[in-house]
Image 1 (cartoon, one colour):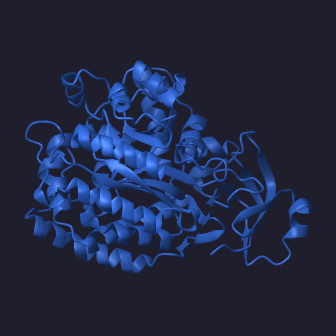
Image 2 (tube, rainbow, N blue to C red):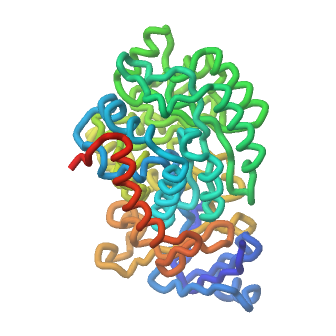
Image 3 (cartoon, one colour):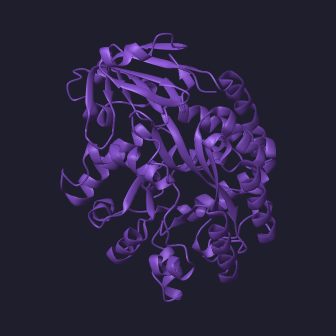
Length: 459
């Protein structure tokens, strides 16, 4: 529940569109909103008896991060899957067989582990993809609600049991009847969409080739009827272009033909899209989730992010899952994103730290469709913010604190996390999740999952 919170004498970056920086700034939240932001004499008269008080000396206060591509079911796969294989082998021989052995308990436990990691790294909102019925979607939604985070939860839909390339057959345990998945979406939407203003139920085709034209037609109808968002992997590897070429389409014309070029749509990776695709997506108000660590680890290619931005695409950042990134730390991802574009374009100005922060914060809230109420430290906005400790050797000198944030910081520098006025972490301690229980159970369950899948650890 929301609490009254006072932050005193901090370095505050508001991300309010005016590049406002407050040195020695104060802020006060009440009823889940920012009530006062400014100097001491402006804030203290309305902050007489706060329930929580944070000493901001040596601290940076800013909006939380938005991770726009998360596989909640994959945090339990970290370190269990071989590191040096390409996407199709990685999926068919390891990831899919392991996930096909999941129980509902595993799905919820894996979600809770990912939630704990994201909160610790300063993520306040995220987009989850490919939530299969096997993972107990209701249990996952409950876990997210209890965590205090904001999230769009993408219910997986499919009726083609493969990736759309020969030999890429999904194990039976992950195959779902399309009617069952759509029915599950409707039930989840009824129970969870809009809960506490923090959860939204979206639809998530696994990949373009995972659905027939008929199912895409029904999916589009559901998106319209329920005003839901959609998220999907798109043009992740070069082989994906064969799928589009065989149908005489491009990524964007494929989306248009199925009425999926729309706002509140986040397409993931987009490594192999063209300028025409970018223009179509920008015109339609779609967003792209850039996941550089995953693309690099799986050898998928380098997404043309600088060109996307130049052509007006709303570019956001995502971490992907446990075995393709090994981290749900969006601060680390921001650094990788900047460096990768610089070297890919042979231009140090190709993607700046400020653009990376915009992608990780403002653009993420825009992709969720809530940038008019959250994502800024501004009076009247939802009180979502994080506090980072700048008094660390790797962040000193702190004169260039935003550059340091991208190039030198990591998630462990986050000390406090607040969403809608509810503290999720204070002084490095998680408040909404039992971290020790999650860690203990995750260690125990990983071995059981591998045993059920008939596999041995990659190492």
